[in-house]
Image (cartoon, rainbow, N blue to C red; front, top):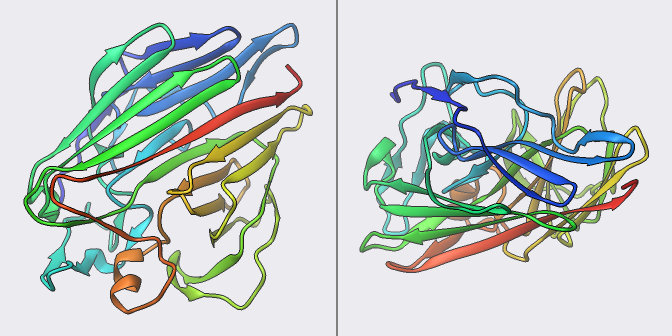
Length: 300
């Protein structure tokens, strides 16, 4: 069982480039708490802003953007087989059946660098912490650019054994709809992926009161988000982030488009021989890396 610690957003750090501003909370899961643009029309928030100053790490505010590392989404029953056949059992928070969203968003990150337009943060994971037997470092570099924002992450295997891994970004957009192309829609049950579906994935994803979660793979790494005031935001992800999760909660309070490297429960599906999960194994001392650009394309 994992201990529930309180995360404090302060001190908030700020980076900016021209009209584009990002606020970040390294001590609260290495997350972006706000991404906005100011112009003659006022201030526009691309992400749902986080206004809370602190929260229990297992009950985070649904806003901003946080890192997913060393896996995305869920691991069924918090168990999976390691590459050497060992059975891994991950610690979970009270009342949580599945391991969820890795370890990065539940912990403080150290600030390695802070410039006017750039911040670099590091999360150090010790071997066997929370049941994950491998030691690794995750390094995020987040920049405010003339076009908007750029996020990148490296995951370095510090252990002496190969490490299965995945990563990605979990932004909560204040958009009304998203459009993106993908080749595969995955079946899921209670947000645990089961396998590829025969259904064609939708291209258009609209914020709606009923809510939904869609696991997509083979996406082209590009998406367009449209906002109620006519503004749009373009996402461009590296090929390493070959999966995308589109999530709208019941009530339609936000729209998540999450560029990630693998599907939900990818470790277990991969061990079952299901192809296309996106799971990778990082050799001892090796690393994986990917980035995501968020480009303001209209209305500014």
